[in-house]
Structures are given as C-alpha cells and as structure tokens.
Length: 105
Image (cartoon, rainbow, N blue to C red; front, side, top):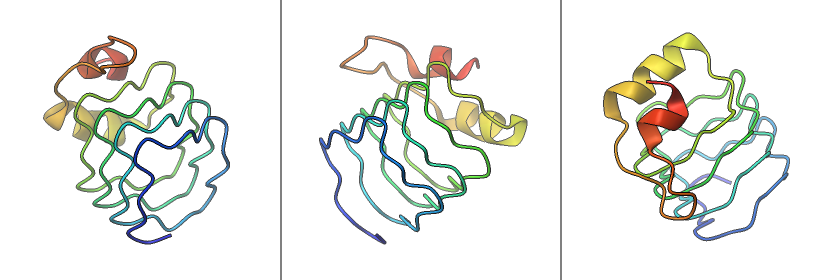
C-alpha cells in the first residue's frame, strides 16, 4: 500500500492492521473506528481526515501531515501525542472539532 491514494475514501471500521502505507494520502478520508494498529504511516497525509475512535497502538506516524484532523476518542501513546501536538493545527471541516482539542493538547 505504499504511496496509495485514499483521498475521500470511506474507511470507517476498516482493518489496516500492520499495513505499510508510507507516503500514502488519506485527505478527507473517514477512518473512524478503523484499526491502524502497528501500521507504518510515515510521511502520510491525513489532511481533513476523521480518525475518531481509531485504534493506533504501535503505529508509526513520523512526518505525517495531520492538519485539520479529528482524533476524538483515540488513545495515543504519550510520545505520539507530544509529537502530534507540536504540529497540530486547524479544525476538521466535517466534524468542526479543532485538531489540538481532539488530541488533548
């Protein structure tokens, strides 16, 4: 799945467990309640995506773009939360939730 285009996709509840999605784009995608555990999402673009309730334990998000994303009810490892809070900005256009607020920054 490296460098795939999932822009605008309905991936609600999808299992992407241990997927290798480095450099893929998820702009405006609905990833609510998706299983992203142990996946590699380095350099992925999640701009405007909704990830509410997703499972992301042990997933890698180095250099991922998270502008305007909604992470409501996602349990984050402390190091991931800290890294996300450094770059988080904007408000999700679908849910109206500010990214920093959804991350608990």
